[in-house]
Length: 447
Ligand SMILES: *Cc1c(COP(=O)(O)O)cnc(C)c1O
Image 1 (cartoon, rainbow, N blue to C red):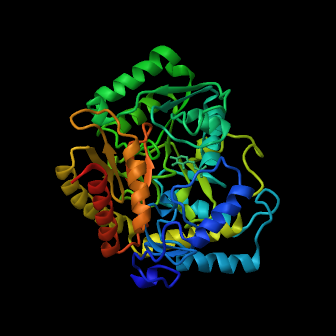
Image 2: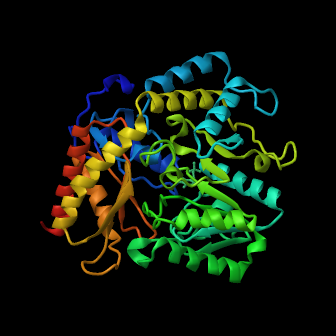
Image 3: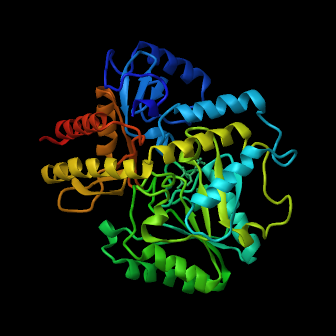
């Protein structure tokens, strides 16, 4: 599929300097002086080009990308149709503000989202700049429609870094610590986490919903918001039946069921959206990350009557649905259709699961391999227990970076490696990346 990715980069892993190389070290020095120390970095390198399954750094090292910029460049970096869309649009019109003067690309993206998101009911969309902004606006819409205050979220959730969305996020360090006070009327209930709670979907649902009914009151609930597979939480796939039961409860109780598909959306899990796996049709869905091939864009898509319940002027923003970002989204979605990326995500998932299952046999620190499609995680725990091993993923990521592979960590306890390669990565590159991870694990815990 060489026509699938942009920069004409050799698809190989090649480390030609120490990591970080001299130019990356120089940039690290400048960063230290100029950039707030509050920003972390998963790998100590500075990228110059990327495409297909590789990132090339300023020193000429070629890394296998198993993170896709956190599930963003699903179609690959600088994918041809994305670049074309950006280029054409940038020459015509970069900005008017949609609330000042409208433009076709915004409407086009909304039409497309209404078509491809779960359910064939009448839907409408509104566009924003980031996942957090989409989540905030989904909450606004749900409160306006229901005229109720409470929002239900789950343990291990991640919904963003703004005041409302960090309140909705479950993990203190680094997302919430020292940033309070938090927003009111956000209530956290247990998630379905089969490895750790051992509950089937129905029992996990009853446990969560009992808390809602007795501690919050069903009639106070505007929305239940959930990631159908938790992302930062560590790719926690809820037990079968959990999501459909939640959705049914919302329908029965006049609450809005919001699926936060910011990380799971756009072919990542082997379907267009993770809700599709169980035929769950959310009232409202939030999307961002994979939507526009790396350009900042986000969306709230929902039942027309819910999306229209807000007064005119109640939603918006200066940049939301920027024309160039919209053109990138059309290029990104067209790429997903042309290359059948849901199918490719399933193939990538099968390959990852096959290789990682063998690893799990070999290493007793692996508590579970889980995920869907090209969204796969490894959870580490002390052998024979569920006690998290939070230092291991960090050590593995550091070792992998030295060998030319970018991997990301995750989890409330930090004990998880998450793999989400671009969906245009080759089998060879993916297999090589996983071999490097296996060798890192052997070196770290002893083969
Ligand atoms: C990343 C993420 C967000 C926040 O998106 P930003 O674009 O970083 O604001 C919200 N929800 C989920 C599920 C995410 O993974």
